[in-house]
Length: 113
Image 1 (cartoon, rainbow, N blue to C red):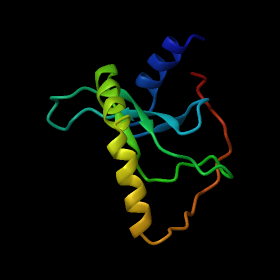
Image 2: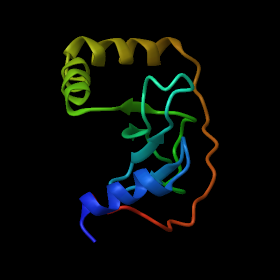
Image 3: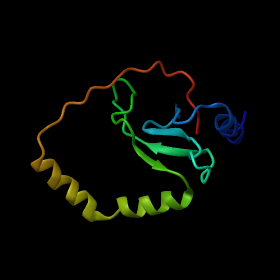
């Protein structure tokens, strides 16, 4: 089954807010439900969410959600700005260290991308 067919099947058959693992660690597919008012139809999105290397589980409840190629380009431009890296380092220096707790996953139903 092609990636296009798998994505179409995922859009049709999965529940709203269902997250599917991909072959790239930290990249998930997310089914967005339609809006209650009907102004937005259900759709698929990419979720970028760092994973715990020991468990392959997402480290955050919700990551960065990307709904289109245009959004990806905009986010990439923002994240490649050198000021973001400097700001993150400064935040690390003032924040207390945080220990993460992650749930384990069985690794089933991974979508190859």
